[in-house]
Structures are given as C-alpha cells and as structure tokens.
Length: 192
Image 1: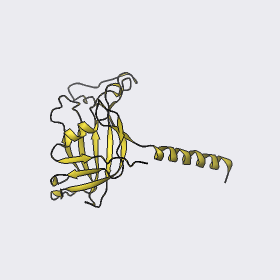
Image 2: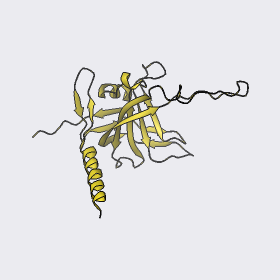
Image 3: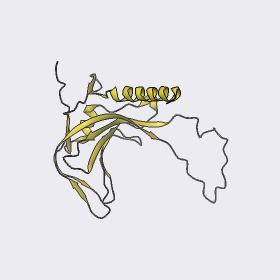
Image 4: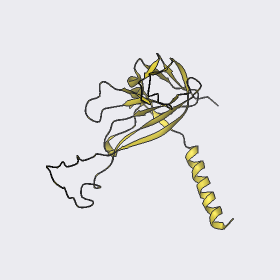
C-alpha cells in the first residue's frame, strides 16, 4: 500500500465514523426543544393501509395546509409494486429502527414552447441557475420489516419553500398528519 492509499482510507474511514456517529434530533413542537427518536419508538397502524395497484407509496397530508407548497406530509413507502392488485398492510405496532435527516430538492420546470411560440433563447446562467433551490426538509423513519416485509419506511416532509423559509416538521405536526390512521410513539430515553 502506498502512503496516499493509507491517507485516503483513513480520511474515508473517519468520515464514515463521523457520519454514522451523528444522531438525528427532531423537534417535539415549535415551543419545545429537540428530542431523539431512539430505538424502541414505534409507528402503530391503527387500521390496515391499502396500497393501490402500480404504487409504492401511500400519501398522508395535512388537510388544513393551503397553497402549492402545502404543509407537512408523510408517505408510507413500500419495497414492492404490485401492478395487478391492491396490497394491504395490516394494522399493528411497527418498531422504528432508525431516523435519518432528509432533504427533498425540488426544481421548477418552465413550459416547453409549442410550435406557435417558436424557439426561445436564453443566456446561460440567466434564469436557469440564478435562484435558490426549493426544498422540503424532513425525516425518513426506517421501519422494522418483521411486521410486513414490504413496508420499508415512513418519510415526513415540511413545507416546500426556499431554504431560508422552510423547516423540517415537528413531531406534533407529524402526529397531526397521521391523524387516526397511525400513531407515532417516541420511547423515553433510558436513564444512567
């Protein structure tokens, strides 16, 4: 092994340890502080959830949210797509194995000019890269697959907006979105 290979290996190993050693904290509500969602926390499906044919996600959203960016939303994500029939995930308690920070990057797309509009020219960098990226920050709640091997995770996202004006959802907002479909229970941390 060369010195460069050893140095690169050490740097990559250090970064992996640094990233893996970080814990994800979630805000309980806007008025309170941050909490860890430790192992032992659960997502309880209060009733069976149906997955329509050809889909890998079931969307849940805050019905009180208005506007194009909406508010908090959650999606249950599945590993397998059945193109022929509806799948069903049974009601029950599902352990959360880990929580991961997530940011969904969203870009706008200008409509393509039709044959009557002609060709549209634009200077490079003018309007196509000058603004900020719209984002939806949130969390992946990875679920134990012993309840149903097809159920992978729940992803919950905050409002779509410029990075300076948006934030990840709080646990209170996530619970409001889940409504009577599911219950998110955070395990109390173990004392010393």
